[in-house]
Length: 401
Image (cartoon, rainbow, N blue to C red; front, side, top):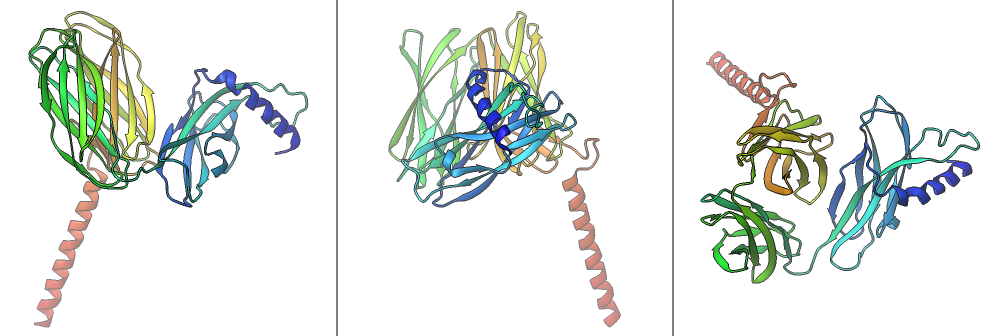
């Protein structure tokens, strides 16, 4: 890059602050990557710039934040063509032998879009930054001994039904957690205690994640209630609090369907929701966040809004580009928004070569057209080869006799 373009690049950095709240069709994925600290670790991490508007533009990539000195970008000036849905690039992390106190150390990889005249070599070209997006890198330094963090998700219910509590627990310490469970206390509007229960028990390997679950029967009047959750892991405690609703105005997340999927393509999630209230709900929409088991946020997608008649079932659509995504288990954090209220559901999804399965659904695809799945074909081929080998062995044996 010549001196003229470097000067223009500096000018663009100055206007970045004014773009912090700018809503843009420019995208980046994953939006967050989490890695566990290792002394002297060298790691190459891939990102992709998403061209949602399918237009020609250039982008500058740079790093800011706590870890900037340990990160280098493979190519800081990237050209994106209108025909390209996304362009991939890499950055390299080279960590020192020590990295401060335990916990999360964060930095940001900034992708800034600017007008195509930039870097054209022309003199007196106005510098106009168009938009900027950020992908966060978090380096997690483990805590000595036993240390865990947790969240709580509550799925509201109708009167007399079960309120579901899902409590993910993350082991960020250097020792195994032998026993983790939770006590949940339920309080009413005037903070009077109206119930309590204990969850199941789980154990967690180092860097492991697990879920504690429990149910509470909502034999109460409609309204807002308060849960106090105390997670106990080998004698150490985490206190969490959450409000939830019991009663009428409620949208249920019924099921999630994934059809016609091949790893590397865009997975389309059909999220079926049901209006449990007897009146029209306008502007219902959802947000889906996909997390890896290491805490990496792969995508965050807000759906279009729909209207739901009383007791009607509707469908929201969410998308996830799985190019470069490894086979394995992921967490889908679903939130549905309606009338100033929300419904949450945390679903574990298993991504395979030609399917995505969850707690409630299974989608299987072969080349996006139905038929026999790729995994099934491989199994049939192996079975046929075994039969051929057995037949050949029997034939040779009879000839010797």
